[in-house]
Image (cartoon, rainbow, N blue to C red; front, side):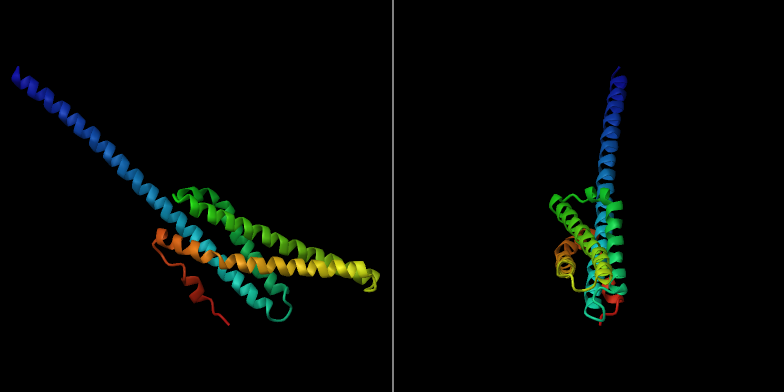
Length: 194
């Protein structure tokens, strides 16, 4: 009878240990999985923000040469928009970042990028239409010329705000760099700067 009791206690202790071990393994696996998802999200968003910052600087530099809003500058801005679109496609990964403040900063920054880019593109389209109207009716119409001047100023302001917004990525990228355990400075080193 004593042997049966000992066997029963051994089975119970074994079952408890197996349950605790399984629970601990599941918890550890969940922890490691969450950590890896956070690292991946930090890597993704850090790269997106780094590229946006770099391309915006290049666009600002190109604005200083030749036609400020010529084809090259506009291509660069479309590249920034494609990066913003990449953010939109992967936005659900933002929730893998545990820090709510970082999530909010990234999202607010990306919304500002998107809205500002749309402002530049909309103003550019309206400028082209206004210039065509001026050609058709002649440059003597002061209201059309004023409208064109206003649109030019709107586009300039939107672009300037885009450059200011890009400068705000640095502290966020620094935080993401720590989470990703990787530097995002590689982009700046591979693109030659004038």
